Length: 353
Image (cartoon, rainbow, N blue to C red; front, side, top):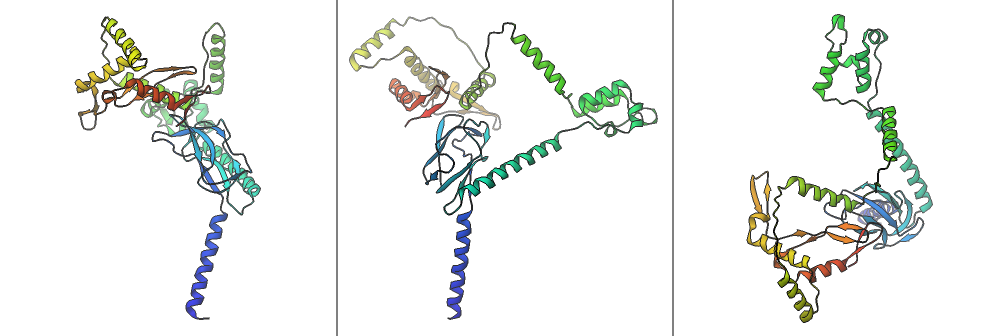
């Protein structure tokens, strides 16, 4: 055998070993980024169970983003070995581990066992790190503690501070109340609420709520959180002006009747209001602009986008109607939008097509 053929055989053998090792590694399935503004997601439902075969393109689970519920497809072939984030798991950061996929040729049960132990170790290490970061109150030497006044000790305990770390201006290095107050003020340290105080506050809240408070706390979906955030920002960050006018819409109602008879389409008054607002914003572009704080200049928007409140059987949603000033048939646009979105009783918005 020549030297060249031996070298080629060696390269092929190394490539085979490298490829076989790569294939045998399990695949970590992480929370994907399914929308440009998605920071975390919720697992709505798993469509594959542990031990089931998975082919590239199969839907693994349904993920609720900040906008809708989207199917998450697998990019690899193998067996779903372990589900680390069961259905209902919420606030999973993008990139967070949600499952482990065993590749062809691997024993998925062994991969599942190793994934379980790894998950437990990760949880334990995270707990230890959190405990290390948690500030603890450490008593100083008995001589110093005995020389402290009761007010000083109370301040140290309430703020979880170590008296040896605070500059002392009292006689013979004694720590004074003013020293602690100055340290707290300069470092903007807030008092820590103890478990006892928390229990007292929660008990008081429960007692007051049982005296006849007529409300119920409901957990928000990711989409509702985004709606609440965006509407709050639009209300707080944008100046508002209110104008009231009285008008007669008899001619508008007559036009609606004519369009229904001639075109067979039932236009609502809301459709005409949206169209009128879009045309007004197009005629007066100053009202369709935003202020760029960095450039210190206004930015005029080419598209007239209007958010509209839509009542559903499960609550209120606020879809955005794009480019309304250039759409001749707003009603048709609203109809297509309503048919492309399907609202489920679980509070999730599903994309149908």
